Length: 86
Image (tube, rainbow, N blue to C red; front, side):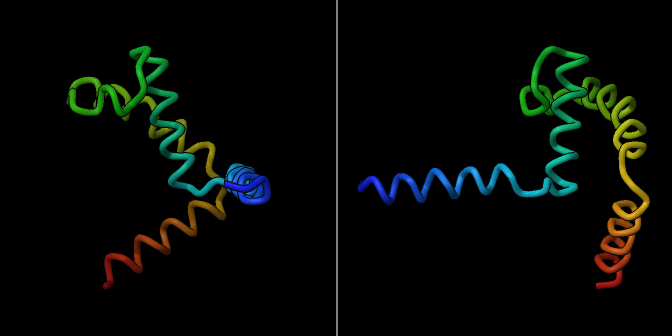
C-alpha cells in the first residue's frame, strides 16, 4: 500500500470518528457505560444474562432519555410512528 493510500485511509478513519454520533451510537455507549458501572464488563459480555440486562436497563433508560434533547426525542418518535405505519 502506498503512502498516499495509507494517508487517505487514516483520514477516512479520522473523519468517521469526528462525525456527529447517531442516536444508536449514543444508545450503545450508554449500554456499555451502564454495564461497566454495574458489572465491570461491557454490555456484549453480559447481554445473555436476563437478570443483569434487566438491572442495566432499569437504571439506564431514565438516564439516557433525560440526556436527549426535545428535538432528538421528536425525531425518534416520528421515526417510530413511520416504522409502525409501514
